[in-house]
Image (tube, rainbow, N blue to C red; front, side):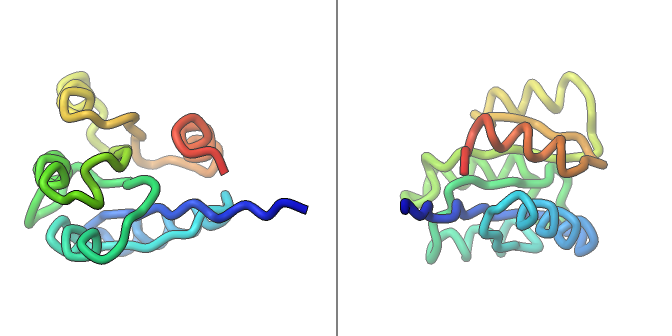
Length: 126
Protein backbone atom coordinates (compact mmCIF):
# COMPACT_ATOMS: atom_id res chain seq x y z
CA UNK A 1 0.00 0.00 0.00
CA UNK A 2 1.30 3.45 -0.95
CA UNK A 3 0.85 6.24 1.54
CA UNK A 4 0.87 9.77 0.26
CA UNK A 5 2.43 12.58 2.20
CA UNK A 6 -0.05 15.33 3.02
CA UNK A 7 0.53 18.59 1.19
CA UNK A 8 1.17 21.62 3.38
CA UNK A 9 -0.58 24.95 2.86
CA UNK A 10 0.12 28.27 4.55
CA UNK A 11 -2.99 30.45 4.88
CA UNK A 12 -2.46 34.17 5.50
CA UNK A 13 -5.32 36.42 6.58
CA UNK A 14 -5.66 39.14 9.18
CA UNK A 15 -9.25 38.11 9.94
CA UNK A 16 -9.33 35.26 12.51
CA UNK A 17 -12.76 34.13 11.30
CA UNK A 18 -11.48 33.62 7.74
CA UNK A 19 -8.38 31.81 9.02
CA UNK A 20 -10.63 29.44 10.95
CA UNK A 21 -13.05 28.87 8.05
CA UNK A 22 -10.26 28.44 5.48
CA UNK A 23 -8.31 26.07 7.73
CA UNK A 24 -11.38 23.95 8.33
CA UNK A 25 -12.18 23.73 4.60
CA UNK A 26 -8.61 22.82 3.66
CA UNK A 27 -8.27 20.19 6.38
CA UNK A 28 -11.56 18.67 5.19
CA UNK A 29 -10.01 18.53 1.72
CA UNK A 30 -7.07 16.53 3.12
CA UNK A 31 -4.36 19.19 3.41
CA UNK A 32 -2.08 19.96 6.35
CA UNK A 33 -2.56 23.63 7.26
CA UNK A 34 -0.71 26.26 9.19
CA UNK A 35 -1.74 29.88 9.46
CA UNK A 36 -0.38 33.40 9.78
CA UNK A 37 -2.39 36.44 10.82
CA UNK A 38 -0.30 38.94 8.85
CA UNK A 39 2.22 39.23 6.05
CA UNK A 40 5.04 39.82 8.52
CA UNK A 41 4.04 36.75 10.54
CA UNK A 42 4.00 34.73 7.31
CA UNK A 43 7.51 35.83 6.36
CA UNK A 44 8.81 34.77 9.78
CA UNK A 45 7.12 31.38 9.38
CA UNK A 46 8.51 30.93 5.87
CA UNK A 47 12.03 31.31 7.17
CA UNK A 48 11.41 28.11 9.18
CA UNK A 49 8.89 26.18 7.12
CA UNK A 50 8.34 25.45 3.42
CA UNK A 51 4.71 24.97 2.42
CA UNK A 52 3.68 23.35 -0.85
CA UNK A 53 1.31 26.27 -1.54
CA UNK A 54 0.44 29.66 -0.08
CA UNK A 55 -3.13 30.93 0.13
CA UNK A 56 -3.11 34.65 0.93
CA UNK A 57 -5.67 37.35 1.44
CA UNK A 58 -5.11 40.50 -0.59
CA UNK A 59 -6.15 43.16 1.93
CA UNK A 60 -4.17 43.10 5.14
CA UNK A 61 -3.10 46.07 7.27
CA UNK A 62 0.64 45.61 7.79
CA UNK A 63 1.52 44.22 4.38
CA UNK A 64 -1.02 43.47 1.68
CA UNK A 65 -0.93 40.18 -0.18
CA UNK A 66 0.62 41.74 -3.28
CA UNK A 67 3.52 43.17 -1.24
CA UNK A 68 3.88 39.83 0.50
CA UNK A 69 4.37 38.02 -2.82
CA UNK A 70 6.99 40.57 -3.79
CA UNK A 71 8.82 39.83 -0.51
CA UNK A 72 8.58 36.06 -1.06
CA UNK A 73 10.92 36.37 -4.04
CA UNK A 74 13.72 37.17 -1.57
CA UNK A 75 13.13 34.07 0.59
CA UNK A 76 14.82 31.03 -0.97
CA UNK A 77 12.46 28.54 0.73
CA UNK A 78 9.41 30.38 -0.62
CA UNK A 79 10.47 31.95 -3.91
CA UNK A 80 9.09 29.13 -6.04
CA UNK A 81 6.05 28.29 -3.89
CA UNK A 82 2.76 28.70 -5.79
CA UNK A 83 0.49 31.43 -4.45
CA UNK A 84 -3.28 31.66 -4.67
CA UNK A 85 -4.93 34.89 -3.58
CA UNK A 86 -8.34 35.07 -1.98
CA UNK A 87 -10.24 38.24 -1.37
CA UNK A 88 -13.59 39.97 -1.31
CA UNK A 89 -12.12 42.17 -4.04
CA UNK A 90 -13.50 40.76 -7.27
CA UNK A 91 -12.43 43.08 -10.03
CA UNK A 92 -10.34 42.92 -13.14
CA UNK A 93 -7.48 45.08 -11.80
CA UNK A 94 -6.95 42.97 -8.67
CA UNK A 95 -6.89 39.77 -10.72
CA UNK A 96 -4.51 41.37 -13.24
CA UNK A 97 -2.08 42.43 -10.50
CA UNK A 98 -2.26 38.93 -9.01
CA UNK A 99 -1.40 37.35 -12.37
CA UNK A 100 1.38 39.87 -13.00
CA UNK A 101 2.95 38.96 -9.66
CA UNK A 102 2.85 35.28 -10.58
CA UNK A 103 -0.15 34.05 -8.61
CA UNK A 104 -1.46 30.76 -9.97
CA UNK A 105 -5.11 31.53 -9.15
CA UNK A 106 -7.55 33.85 -7.40
CA UNK A 107 -10.53 32.91 -5.21
CA UNK A 108 -13.30 35.31 -4.26
CA UNK A 109 -14.67 35.42 -0.71
CA UNK A 110 -16.95 33.97 0.37
CA UNK A 111 -15.93 30.59 -1.01
CA UNK A 112 -16.96 27.06 -0.15
CA UNK A 113 -15.31 23.66 -0.05
CA UNK A 114 -16.14 22.92 -3.71
CA UNK A 115 -14.58 26.21 -4.88
CA UNK A 116 -11.38 25.57 -2.93
CA UNK A 117 -11.17 21.90 -3.84
CA UNK A 118 -11.53 22.69 -7.54
CA UNK A 119 -8.80 25.34 -7.52
CA UNK A 120 -6.37 23.38 -5.36
CA UNK A 121 -6.77 20.16 -7.34
CA UNK A 122 -5.43 22.05 -10.37
CA UNK A 123 -2.36 23.37 -8.58
CA UNK A 124 -1.71 20.96 -5.72
CA UNK A 125 -3.18 17.51 -6.17
CA UNK A 126 -3.25 15.38 -3.04
